[in-house]
Structures are given as structure tokens and as C-alpha cells.
Image (cartoon, rainbow, N blue to C red; front, side):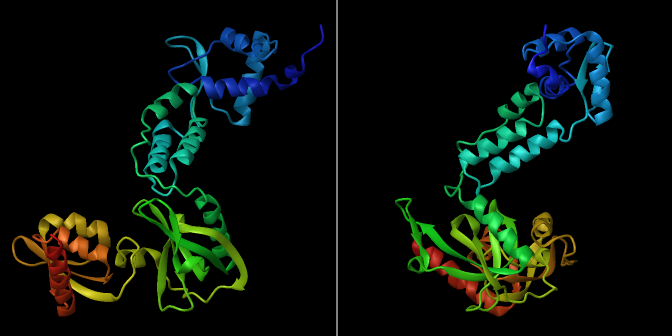
Amino acid sequence: MPKSTNQKLKILYLMRILLTQTDENNLLSVNELISKLAAYDIKAERKTIYDDIEALRQFGIDVVMEKSKSFGYYVAERDFELPELKLLADAVQASKFITERKSKTLIKKLENLTSTHNAGKLRRQVYIQNRVKNMNESIYYSVDTLHGAISEGKKISFKYSDYNIKKERVFRRGGERYVVSPVVLEWSEGYYYLIAHSDDREGLTHYRVDRMSGTEKLDENRSLISDNFDLAEYSKKVFGMYGGEELDVKLRVSNKLAGVVIDRFGKDVRMIPDGKDCFTVRVNVALSPVFYGWLFQFGELCEVVSPQKLKDELKTQAKKFLNRL
């Protein structure tokens, strides 16, 4: 009887079966492996199964034989453990810049990195429908183009847009293309941002990548960027990727907010005790609506000591807010 074409692929199908259908709680005996191979029109004997499993071990697949409870084989160590896959799935579903459809596609691919039994557990923890997800699927191509331009030191051009109340995209500048020198991509508050230098503006500007479209890498070299640029330090100054005038600010903060200050400005921030229940801290921040909102949020527990310019601005912002009520 001639061998089937699939017979040449026996060890590959065996590897697939072990990777997708076994884990430490789901073992397959030799007879079960033979039966599952038969479903692929592959004939196998016990001895060849033993030999193939040994070959897979030498190849690097961690096939373990369990004898204590029920005799059988399973794949133990994998590239990703289930808790790691759950973390990745959480990151995908929580990301606002990834659309709902793409989120499901990515999580489905993550499921392929574990057994079908554990994939079911992964699916049960995914709740996407009620999350705020973005509508722009071109972000994948934009991110790839941006990485390429940054690594090659080239300028980029793109159109930038917002949405109106009809959920229609409205391009800024009447659809005129922006030309900037990309510096770095930053993931903040669930969104991807491009930090870039524009020749017609001073300092750095931030662009939501999901609002960019038609992103193109240009042949023109980007403007020179300081080698001393520190993204981590820069991010401490900028709230919600809103740029603005930078000020050296002194705050008097309740001890209850020590964790909040560390989360925002890092562990290196110097906190000086001021009385029994408070401390003072000096930070360099970029003034923005998000920063004002941060201060208002902790108004009873955090006050501005200096500069006077910021204190006056906060009073102005507070009046505007009260006038809207």
C-alpha cells in the first residue's frame, strides 16, 4: 500500500497536535496521538511516535511525559506563558488607537501561541465591545512608515484630522499636508503620539497617530535633533501629550498624594517635608489644559506655591469654568 503524501509531514503534524492540543492539564497518550494523526491520513506506529517525540525534544520543543496521574504527553514550556498572553491581550483591548476589529484579529493571533484549551481561557477574559476604540485602521501603516522615517532620519508628510459631531473626518488646514521631522513615537493615555519638530514652529509638537492619514516618508533629511533628547524626562513635563510653555513650578502637596506625584514625575523627584501632613516639590511642566485639569482634580490636596503667573492663570481658568455652570 503506497504511503500518502501527508506521511512525509508526520513529524510536523505531530508537533502541531502537541502544541495546539496539549498542556499540563490536557495530556495525550500515544494511542490518542496515533488516532489524531490518522485524521490527517497519516499512519503511525508506537515506536515511530516515540522516535518523533525524541526528535522534537532535540529540536527544542519541551515535550514532557507525565506518569503520575494519567500517562500521556504534553508541551510544557512555551515562548509565552498564559499569564503573559493575558497581559498582551489586556494591552491590545485597552489600547484606544487599535480598532475593535483589529483588536479581535490580534487577540486571535495571540490565542495561536497557546493550546486550544488555554485559548478558551484567553477569550473569556476579552471584553472589547464596550471599550472606546478608534475608527482609523490606517494606523498600522502609519506606524510602520513613521518607524522607517525615524530610523532613516527622513522627514514625513501627512494629513491631520478631527471628527465632527456627525462622526465625519474633517481635515485641518483644509486638507493641506503637514511636513515635519519625526523624533519619536510615544504611547500615552492609551494613544500613540508622534513627537516631531516642525520647521515653521518652535519646539516640539505632538500628533495623534490615529488622526494622521496618507503618511509618507520623504527623501528630504529631517532637521537635526539634539542627541541629548530624553523621552522619559520630556514625558514628565507634558500632560496628555499637550505641549505648552514650560515653567518651573513649586507645589505644596498633601502626603496622601505622594504616590500620585511619583506616578506622574518619577521616583527621582525631590519631595521636601513641609509640616506634618504636606510636602513641597519642584517640577518642570508644560502648561496645558490637561495639566490645569490635573491641578483642579486635587485642588483640596495640592496648591501652587509659585510662580505667580501660574497662580493667576489658574484663577482665570477657574472663572471660565464657573461661568459655564
